[in-house]
Length: 469
Image (cartoon, rainbow, N blue to C red; front, side, top):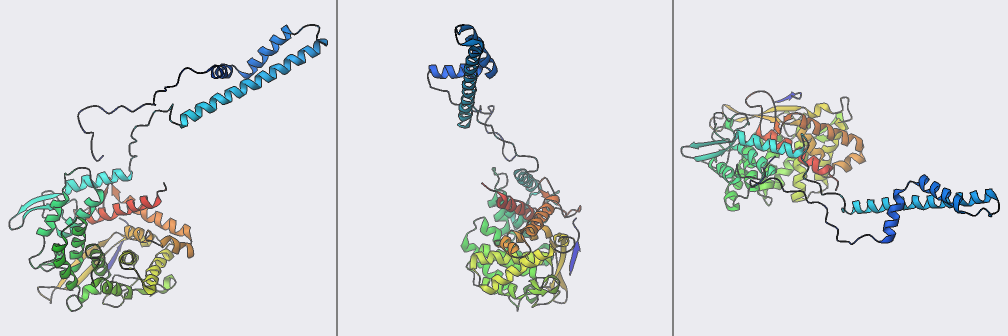
C-alpha cells in the first residue's frame, strides 16, 4: 500500500595563543629609484593642464621679441605646452600601469585571512548534522550484548537513552563517514562494533517491527555500512552469504517482488560484495520488473511492487528514482548490456517527462509511505508489517544526477527542463532541514537518521556537480 504525503565549526583553534598574524607583502630589497624613475614620478604628480600652462607661460616670457611677430611667439609656446602636457599624461599612465602590475604580483596587497563559511553553507549544514548525531547518540550497557553506541530510528529519540537499532545505527555510521569530522567524539569503530553486537542470534539483522528473524533489506544496509567502515572481509563473508539466501524465492517471495526490498539489497551488496554472484540475478529481477506508462510516452518505470510480482505496480516517481539510482550503481560495478542500459535510461526519460506535465513535476517530489507486508516468520497466519517512508525529492534528485542524465535530457525534453527539475528537487531537499537536521514531521520519529543521510548526500553531490574550478 502506497500513501502520498504532500511535502511536509567543526574544530576550534588549537593551543592557547591568539590567532597567527596574517603575513604581509615581502619587503623589497631593491635600492633607491633611478633618476628616470624619479622624473616620471615627479611628472605624474603634476596635473596635465597645470604642466602645459606652466610651460606655455614660461616660453612666452623667454622667447625673444625679435621672433617673427607676436602671433608666432604665442604659437610656439602653445605647441611646447601641449607637448609637455602629453608627456605628463603618458608618465601618469605609466606609473599607474606599474602600480597595477605590482599589485597583481602580490607585492602591494596583503594576503587575505581565512574566510568564514556563509550562513547556511554546506560546511555549516555538515557541522549541524554532526552536532545532531552527537546529541542523538545513545550509549547504553545491555546485559548479554555489552556496551552499545549507536542511534535509534530518529535523532529525537535519545532522551532518555534508548536502545540503538540496526537500521538507525547503520545510517548513522553512513552519515558519520560522509561528514568525516575532525574530532573523535564519535568513534566509527565503536559504532561498527555495535552493529556486530546487534546481529541476531541466527545471523543477519532486522528492523524493530520485524520480529526475531533477519530480513535482507535491513541486513544489506548494515553490511554496506560495515564495508564502508573497513570491516574485516572474512567476518562479512558469512553474513553476505546469509543475506543472499534470505532473498531466495522459496524463502521470501514477497520481498523479491517488492521494489524497495530489491533495490536495498542490490545497493548494499554492491558495497559489501561487488563480486557476489547474486548481483546479476538481482539486477535482472529489477530490470524485468519495469512497466510501461501510457501517461508518459510509454516510457518504462517502476511502482511499489515489481511488475512481475505481487502487489501494485502502478507508476511511482520515488520507486522509479530508486531503481534508476540502483541500476546506475550496478552499471558502474558490473557493466551493462544494451537492454539493461535501455531500461535504465527509460526510467530517466519517465522522470523527465513528469517535469513537462501540468504542475511541472511537483507531485514527483512529494514524500510517500508504503507498507511492506509478509507472512510472519514465527506465525505465517499473521502478517509482518514494515512501514517504509520515502524522501521523494532526494531520490528524484539522486536519479537526475546519475551519469548520462544530462545527455538524455539534451536528446529529449531539453536541458532547461532537466536543470529546472533538478533545481526544484534540491531546493525541496534543502527546505525540509534546519541546521543540518532533516524533519519528516513533528512527532518523536520526525527526524529520521536515514533522512539526514540522504538529504546531506544530495546537497553534497549537487555542490560537487555544480563546482567549476
